[in-house]
Length: 361
Image 1 (cartoon, one colour):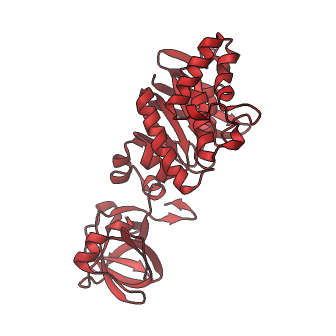
Image 2 (cartoon, helix red, strand yellow; image 1 turned 90 degrees about the vertical axis):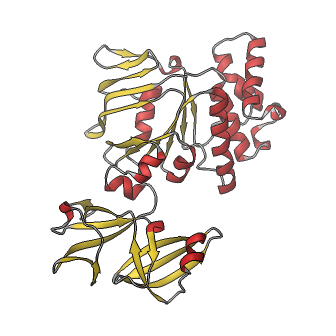
Image 3 (cartoon, helix red, strand yellow; image 1 turned 180 degrees about the vertical axis):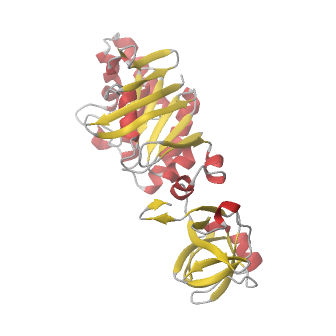
């Protein structure tokens, strides 16, 4: 295993700058999820790591080994970078057996037959697929084919394993199983995994750390899932990771109010930068509680019981917000019925510049 360091990477497609002086260091032996909206440069960054794209500036190192350095004119060929890759569509060869698929990278390296068989079987053992060694891919489920792809990626003792949207094509149950499987494989191998996804839920379940990329390719925040959720760096992180509600806040008399077509008095704390207006209150659905003594009134548009929680949509004036109520809170405070008017209060609020024309003011 080894750390991965991107330093001042700039990459352009013609006049379009995808990455501009992008820097990130992935710690050794960790699963780091690279998360961001489609088109933000996640795949471009990975292609640079794999040697499939050449940056204009910067350097890329894995452990003590420099794979690319624009100034020193170092650019190690893709086939010599020793990085395993698992693709979204598995990319297993349909005419080869499972064992032949996994053995292929070693055959390309002209390893001895005995070594090839031993290492391929060991890789299959790591993903619990030894009993399927002689099966063809069309005899396997989607999850089993993905395990074969992982075995093929780890068979050459790669320094780093890259997974590019590896579970997107699986159904919900298989996605859950594969996330657990990837975590177990990582623990057995002690591998460094760079996991690329736009699926924030998968990232939260799997990662040791998350790197959040904004639409323009900049690194917005890098940290643990707790840090990302509880201490978001800015509005983009708060809005992109998890579900969020936003309501405009403005000065009103000697205090403040929520401007939702109707003004609702707001008695919570408002930071100095938001006290002149032009800001919105941000709150997570599970930080909205029912309290009929509150002056903030809402109408329950819908209520759905999800087994472990209730999911509501409420109208607050001309705005709609989402509320998630745990079973514990439901027992303590009671639930609300569709069509009912309720009072609500907000916990753990944040304040961000209001958006204008799709951009933060």
